[in-house]
Image (tube, rainbow, N blue to C red):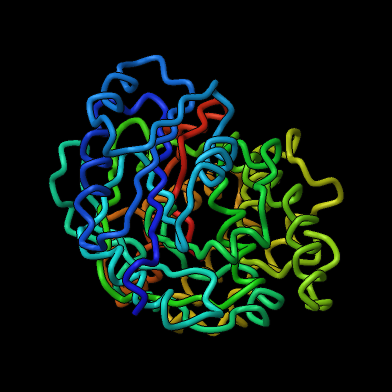
Length: 383
């Protein structure tokens, strides 16, 4: 191991004064000696500046006007010098050992582009919620994922704070397009880095992912504005992924985002078209075709159990075929399935049996809120 290899931890902050001290301290507590901590404040209006200044020379402060997540990450990367980089959200924290585990891989695997690990879920007060993300029953992928991404695009990955990227890989895909990825900049990192190197998983908990009111992870609303935003980001980001793929010799990459066989994207498009067709951002989409393509993509995905494939296939069929109110209720159930309450894959079969029994007994579904205007900070990105 090269003892003087450097790890950069870049903390992206916007108005998280309450959580920022814990994030910074967790970065400073890393057992890997050669660690630099950079804190990028993206135009906060709270007391974040005072928090950053309190740490003095222990951190490298960067203050900028508000420009969004991609802008903050780009600025932070330019200020860094590490051989590997962790982009830590200011409301999350790292375990002290994870930097050392990351650098052990970086120092021995020259082709690695990304290292990912699980995060334990905590609440706004730091209390353990008893779950991890991605869930422990989901295998974290290892190796060369390029052929997988060509066929399926989606793969299991943690939120932003659960990943480390090598500097060599980041330089191949930099900068993150700031207009396209003002939010969800981690999507660009997750989908672009496997095109330029291998992905490695550390099957351990390397940090804590905070769920609180501000990030809207758990919601009783169907946020159609966020659904449409994710579709547009996928559409506008596709040419960047394709250019990187072709530059690295991967000419089989889908020509347009409409050609991508991604069950997550099919689910978003189907939800948008079914529940709010007037503002659906993809002309020419058909509810029936999206339902069929979603089922086929689900069945062909080799990373899911039979029970999960059955559950997701029934979900696509139900949203496509049932009336709007019942379809909205099914969409909401899937949101709740993907919350921390989900513990094991064995629960999927029980949900399959109970989902439509509950649907039949449902009356009007009028307690479902659909809020097209309230976009949350970010969600969990896993396939």
